[in-house]
Amino acid sequence: MSQHQQVTSQPIARVVRPGLFTTIQDSGRIGFQQDGIPVSGAMDPFALELTNTIVGNPADTAAIEVTMQGPTLRFEEETLVAIGGANLGAYLNDVPFENWSTRHVIPGDEISFRIPVSGVRAYIAVAGGFDARVDLGSCSTFTKASLGGLEGRAFKKEDQLAASTLEWDERFWTRRRKRPDPAVYARVYHDGPLRAIAGPEWDAFTDEAQRAFCGEEFTISDQADRMGYRLKGPKLEQAASADILSDAVAFGTIQVAADGQPMVLMADRQTTGGYTRIGSIIRADWPRLAQMAPGEKIRFELVTVNEAHQAYTSSRKHFETFKKALPLFEHV
Image (cartoon, rainbow, N blue to C red; front, top):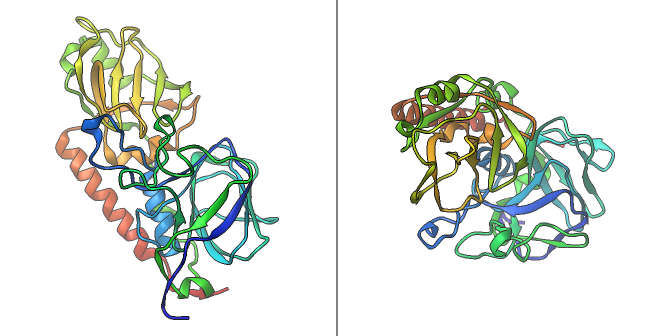
């Protein structure tokens, strides 16, 4: 076998149990928001990128996004698998499958998930990537428009998952990487307030509302999905109406409707919104936001645009450090 093997699209695994909400995601559908089509893509872009990296794939390769309760997958072909992101209690057959690690699987092997430990969204990557429907340049599943993934929907029992046609390095078949130092990715999933910059309508809120936004605690409600998180907390009063002319929104935009309760928009958000935008969570904190569950508490810290740029640059440096921290290959 040559160093770079071309893998033809073929069934690689079967869905025994679909899990709560399991989809195919990549880095997203770029360039169509003016047409009302959201970017979608992985809710935790850091976890997608790193999970692909440790299995030897390009960072934006299509992978499986698991939400809270994971699926059971039975493999039909030999390959290498990595799991990253949330620790949802993954097992390979009857052996725990540690986060941020890879395993060599053979036909008949099963990956399943038992008791969640931490986080909300895990990512499963295979060497070469998953083959899924490409719509508008992306495999990302957007269920509301039936775009990408497996027929534009979440997994169902007996679905067949195919391997991609991407090239992968032969070494990943016979060797794997040790787990990296947890301290490196702990810097990305940091504790403390979520950092946000002031939104375009920041001055539309009363002084008391601004102080509450920066100092009080909010709870993620049960209305939390890939479109957005509704929060419960102190009412954020506005000097005038909560309605504005529809304007652009992004991942992390925090809107406030007439009830004074904030909504954080996520990967499958609409592309424009008609509510005041009090702030926007900075990109460096998206991974941590994506791993927060209903019932968790959120505090916000206001930062400048310059500080947001610095935080993102720092997070990218942490990611590069993470990749460099991966040790040399070891035999399995």
